[in-house]
Image (tube, rainbow, N blue to C red; front, side, top):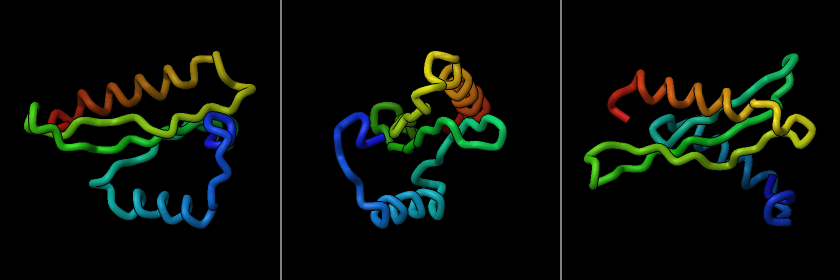
Length: 93
């Protein structure tokens, strides 16, 4: 994704450590993925941020990626709708 959007080559070790940190600390955030025939084809990262204006957490969507050949097929829309449902079911967000 970084190569495609910003022409950046990322250090896989650093990225792996970053992903591991999210997975080990669910208070930081979580990943949402879409699978097609068992293959991960899209994902995004949700990060929590405290909002003093709202006196609660807000969610930030980061690192959105959909495989190029599967874009414009509604995959992100389904993922976003999942996120909206998640937020409405978790009123503390």
